[in-house]
Image (cartoon, rainbow, N blue to C red; front, top):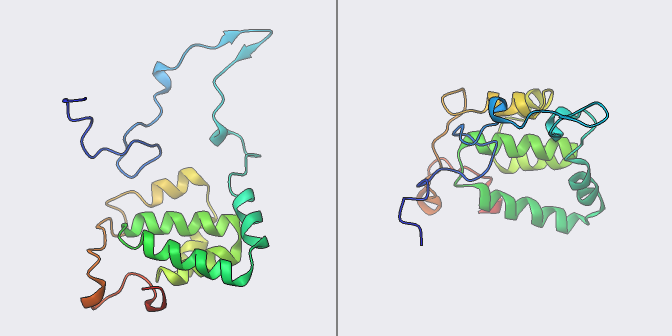
Length: 158
């Protein structure tokens, strides 16, 4: 059992909104001289790496009722997250499939033009644009949905 706090509430994944666990190239292993230089592979450096194709392919074969179920489940479960996280997710959905991104954007009551603008960049620019302290609210929704005057998701999904 750990008794050292286990990094408290720090996220255990990267990239994240808190800036923890960012890559530190100065501590990477040196290149191995194996018939030329060989370095650690980072998929983010590969412009042909499409992390969203498979998600889009799956979305496109779903029936309409399953798509609606996916949008509703996602909206309800992401509702307590901050606006920064919601915009990141909406852009990821948009990269997977335009209709998917537009529907999740509408369900989360986000601005579609903003999602489209963010989608013009890449993952790195998306993370930079949605860091806390930027133009998006980084405060999570308090989830008082029953008494909420400003719902954070479309009421049809509540």
